[in-house]
Structures are given as structure tokens and as C-alpha cells.
Image (cartoon, rainbow, N blue to C red; front, top):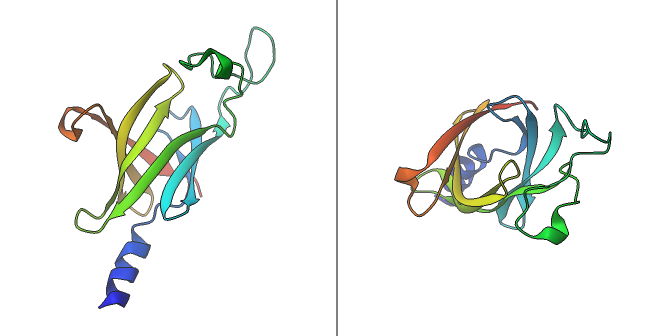
Length: 135
């Protein structure tokens, strides 16, 4: 019994690098304890065109963090597997384009397609994005 749950949970783990649905960035999803986290590992335009420096988190609500580079910045955290829904839930996703953090869940549609849903309050009022596996 435990082995069948373990096998199912193992197939639902979306570890790896994913391209967001805009094609502008890649996010690496990795284990952080018993949860999943993700960081920004590639940007189509990694340099700020005004100064040639790496793009920074200029929209962060914390002024002290606005000079931090976007490259390798954590953007997903706290995702826990829920066997009954077969998805990773109760996480948070940070959107560096506006500095907002949303509740989120992720769910494998198939081995190369990931649904990422960000929301405020309840998932029904959120928005889904579909990421494609890079590796």
C-alpha cells in the first residue's frame, strides 16, 4: 500500500527547469525539505538595457531588496504535495514584474506541461499559467 502511494507521489513531482508561458524566463523547481521551491534561473533579457547590469528586483515591496538581481531569485516556495488532489498546494509565487506574492498550486498536466495557478484568497478566482519543461 505505501509503495503504491510512494510511486504515485513520485510521478507527480515536477522537478526540473520549466519555461514560463511568456518564454521570457525559466524557473528551476527543486526540493526544499518535504516541500517544493523554485528559483528564476534564466531570463531572455537578463541585462538592464539602461545600464548593462543584471536586471534587479525593482518592484519588490521591500526597498532594501530592489537592487537584488533577478537571476537565481526564489519565486516559488512552500508547495506541499496533496495526494487527494494529486498536486502541490499551499505555496506562494512571487511575480517580479509587479512585486506581488500570490498563493499558488502547481499540477502536472503531463510530463512536459505544468499548470501553475496563482490566486488571492480562493483558487477559483485565480489565473492559471502553463509552463513547458526545458529539462
